[in-house]
Image (cartoon, rainbow over all chains, first blue to last red; front, side, top):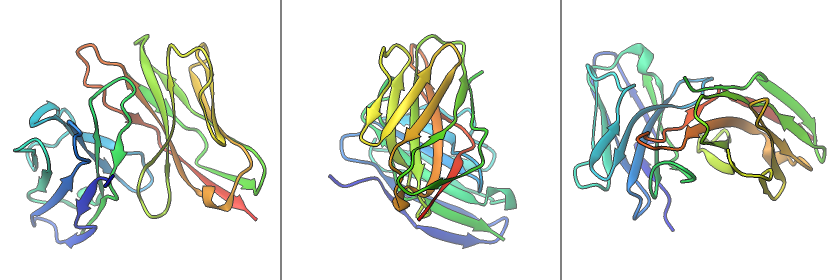
Amino acid sequence: EAGVAQSPRYKIIEKRQSVAFWCNPISGHATLYWYQQILGQGPKLLIQFQNNGVVDDSQLPKDRFSAERLKGVDSTLKIQPAKLEDSAVYLCASSLASGGYNEQFFGPGTRLTVL
Amino acid sequence: AQKITQTQPGMFVQEKEAVTLDCTYDTSDPSYGLFWYKQPSSGEMIFLIYQGSYDQQNATEGRYSLNFQKARKSANLVISASQLGDSAMYFCAMREVPSGNTGKLIFGQGTTLQVKP
């Protein structure tokens, strides 16, 4: 079974530029998550999708971050414009469903450096 | 509010010995799940073990076991017979089981484990 795919693996941009990350979850997984992991910290949930609907985006900085999952499969996370403090690893995860014991499977992450 | 605390920024253990990584949590919900993940230097998060709040027995998965003390709100990870490949960052995480809740994971700050040969 293929795991969660993410691209690109690394991205370096200057502040105020735009960037987009892509995630393809495990086939059949209804729930998709985007996490931000700043160096030395645990991941923090940015947004959670159930199929193509948003169920939690309470910690997404909506003035600059946006995400979509139009067909309920793959997803894109965008930052526009980027700030220095957005430098982090962006992790995508998926699970069969949300809640209870539903193991989240993580992708390799995209390491973003904002200069 | 939910909170996970990992008080050990870094730990060392001798190869083949056991090590305990501490995790305490705070929640007002009686129904929740506790997870441990391993993050090697390559960056991916690897699921290790799960404990539900109503589980009567401590969870075990191979060399990993979870020392669940509900009254103390602690969920320590025990790794037996440490191997060099166990060197990584370890995260404790919690999810409140949803009833109208999204079931998001809240992660602790992590503990870096280094296994010495």
